Image 1: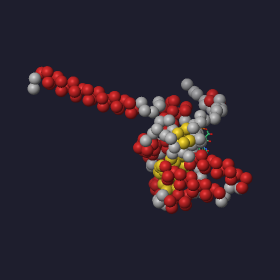
Image 2: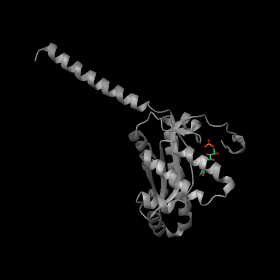
Image 3: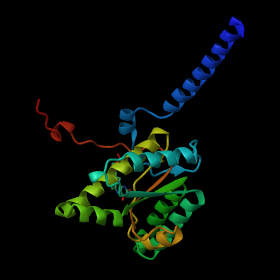
Image 4: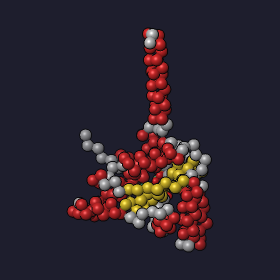
Length: 228
Ligand SMILES: Cc1cc2nc3c(=O)[nH]c(=O)nc-3n(C[C@H](O)[C@H](O)[C@H](O)COP(=O)(O)O)c2cc1C
């Protein structure tokens, strides 16, 4: 090999390495920084199917929350099901059907409009607690059994926040809903959910159609005490 061809090979390798690095940098800059994301995350109720984010990316965001959220004694008791497209629409159709039989006639129209708006989104994430895993945890640390029930709920909140903020960071809008336990049985049947997975929240998401309403903040300095 001449010196010239050796140098050309080295340059080619460097060029490929640089290209890979740039792709990685681009992937990393796909989403907003953490603080901006926390400030921008809102409840977005008006959503459409017209999204620019892949199903894989959305799945990665849910995996991020499920995998990295802290949990009491690292018990990792939270589960999720992601319903895309017609599965998502089916969930909101089922929920509408169940609510129709429950809500008073004067609230039916507004309830149906709400369900329709959620159904117009792209997908819904269902969050569950694994009751078998929680029971095992309570048995292992039986002195704290009652507290652990609360702490596992905190962990669920952290998972939900990561996913909610993660969706915001890629430009999607979401809200947090609670049609459990009304829909539990139907969900279990339709998506073959393990009986020990207890539904705790639903997060419909999609392309935001409207900016969120103005949010009032209570004075932060009345809510935090600082000693330094
Ligand atoms: C634990 C929790 C439960 C909530 N439950 C519901 C709910 O069932 N339905 C709903 O529309 N919004 C629900 N929300 C959304 C709140 O109403 C909303 O986060 C709050 O008004 C602040 O608005 P923001 O999300 O735009 O910042 C819930 C939020 C949290 C944190």
